Image (cartoon, rainbow, N blue to C red; front, side, top):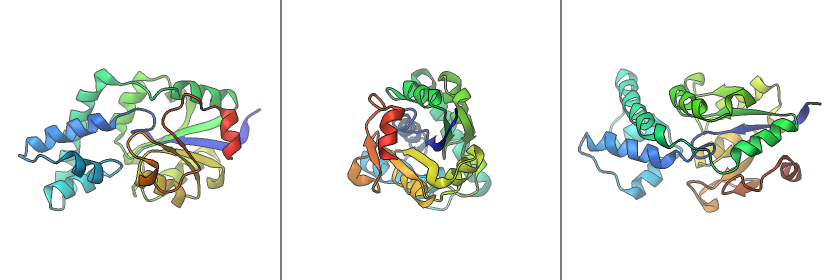
Length: 219
């Protein structure tokens, strides 16, 4: 029997894989080619969980839009994919956790602000694509997190109501997007502390001890 009481939606960066260190490396290479050297503190405050348009405009100190933005984004994300490809591995326990959800008839999805090419790269290396009933990347929405569009559309794709959805997120804007969608949230503490995120229903550092049965407790 399918379990229609709950659907689980995963963000990608910092939730399925620890990509943030590699995004940092790609941005460092991108900015260093432009004689800029952001500090770790600046990256923590203005990169993790932020959109590329925000990041580029912030560090270049001017609006980056239109064709220039598309070219810069492609350059930076191309750097990211090249740097990250040899290192792709899932966050501990997530493959087993998603298999357990599947075994219990739970619908799952991925909803990321990253470009589809990044998502395709990761899904080409991990045995997850066939589990997801909805796969959305930045190209699939008009408004980015913290706007709830990507999560609301994921719920529609899965045939679930927002209140039936549980989201796994690691960033302030991502948790905010899920809360704005009226969904419950598990905070994945891969790049932030509890204190740096809006209040979540549960916090995890990885998926080692997480099972469908344990999710029932928070639902």
